[in-house]
Image (tube, rainbow, N blue to C red; front, side, top):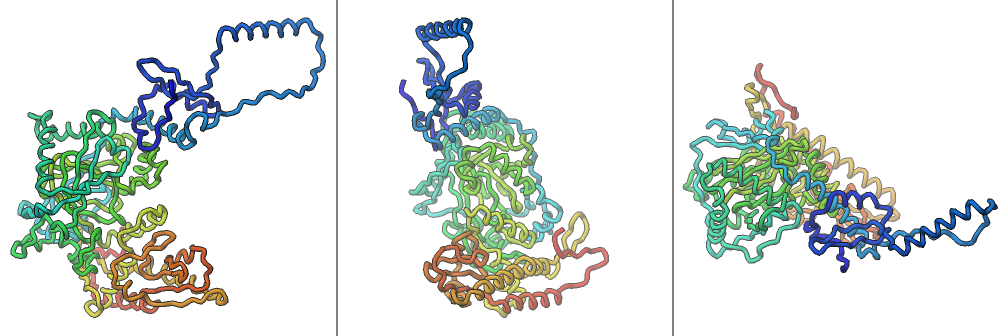
Length: 633
């Protein structure tokens, strides 16, 4: 029988079921690797074993017995004499090299991981116990609460809803926006192909480069849906969804049944394809605060500094056209922002959420379950291509919530909350990110996460959003940017009691403690470092070039991919840019560098003083029964 190389890379998922005893035996002989045991029966190929074959034939057995008998006789008949030294050395057993086995070290390592993963999945694949997965909490805002989305969400945050990870919001019955998504026939939507059995393998999605029109996608999705709904005829909506959920995770986790491939039209720019919310100025919903295209311009939104300019991935809504089993894998939002998702039309979407306090636990369990993927790429979760069953996570102590989102309902994800899901049929949804005061600490945390991984570039700089909001508060309409609007004091109803909430003052404290102090300290250190070496360096401090000031493109540190908004250091030889925390790492002869600053030290300090004066001027004294919030509780 010819020797087959061990499966590697993409085909590890195809490893045949392996006998448990054989696996344990193989794992216990790590230091006794010999020639592979390749015996097999005609009906079934034997599992690959690296145990030394010690079997001998009859002739060798007789010779060995005869020799042992002679040695025994000599021991009893010959007088004992001192042993003579001999030049013959005992033949040393040589460990068989990986080349002789036909596999490389990396392949053997991957096979070992595959065996361990196979054992883990064998015990987990039948886990369909959703009793430990909790139902996501639903909120029903009143007409009054529904008038101000930012204020309502801030209230929920201070009430402790952030501990739930995600929540469902069902608006008042009066909220009925029309459905306006209808791209022209010649406008083709990019889609991604998703094979359900590959979702647990973390493979990147193939892209439909030719795209598909919205009308053709809808026809395809409804035909697929009709075919796969047949086994559930006669069941109620709840019963059908429950059975479909079990089937979905069997496809994903157990690789059962035929290979199912679906398409998902995700991240469709509302600027290019249009929003599904009404846009006609004569329609009152075109200016409604819960129309996601207006979220960034709302009072108390920190994205007002965009000045109405829509920037993809920040304040520009994305439309999602899904079909049965279209999936979005586990992730949290860029820079840990809030996100809000509205279901416009179609069938439901299953959501799973993990609160921020369980983020580390989720990542540890996912790393154990997807050991092979994490061995290849420690930052696999940043790719948003891996699925893990909520039942498996819950059975391992991770807090998981789930719900089905229906048309007309919102899903709000809180900062740092992992979430995932899949569609129960054809549907169209829309989502956008939100940035408000309660996000600031999460934004700062996300910077540290990105610096640690050095794999993902933030969609925007935290310095940008904080400094420009402070600058606007300081000068209002006098400066050349948009005028942001914050309530001087918001009165939130937290746990039935009024709570005075001053977002401006909180923002000012954050600027002083986390942005201004750090920036001024690092500038002083780098100036001191280079000024001590005047003979080696010719250091100049310059303002940002005009094209960089006006450009929306981010300036990345070559070393740590940190976004350099307030300052950076540039090597004038190789032209590489570094943040002032990492100076120059290029190794060039450092004959001349330049330090670029967007704002001088004096300007940054003036922002601090002028904004503080305006904030204190606007604060009203609190009533006896009100509490003033300076920093988050």
